[in-house]
Image 1 (tube, rainbow, N blue to C red):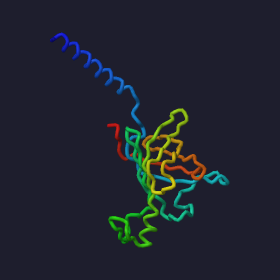
Image 2: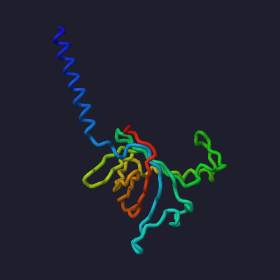
Image 3: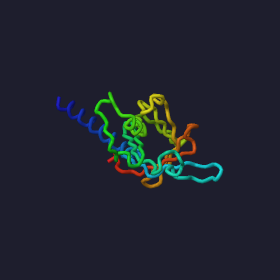
Image 4: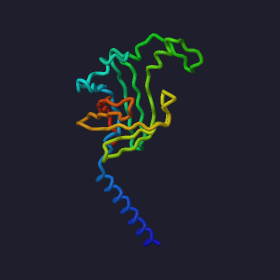
Length: 178
């Protein structure tokens, strides 16, 4: 009986150590963590230049701010709002049963979605398979982004036609690999 217990202990210890060594050899998920929007830009094909979103005439004179989060279980979320979004005297009910038109317009400038993500390292793209979205028409759609890393900066470029020529630069705030 003692021999069987010793044998099982050795097998389990070996399995644990081999799994532990394999995980040390794997490269950590570079996406995992919390990111803060640093810069959003649009590409002008005529001038061949990138311009800041806040200078684009899109109705957000100060630009946008937001957060992006990726976990190690292939879930992600993003939330974008105009700079100063939280600085309002408007009142919002806890349950939206009666909301003023001004508050509703303000709330409509908040852009958020949750998704499962997959990475294609060969194509250098990340796909966000949306679970929910602040725009009901975008639920269950897949958004594909080209990606690149430079130090603590992640650059994402949407490839869908409506957003082509846009790039968002995110700065790493915290890491979930630790």
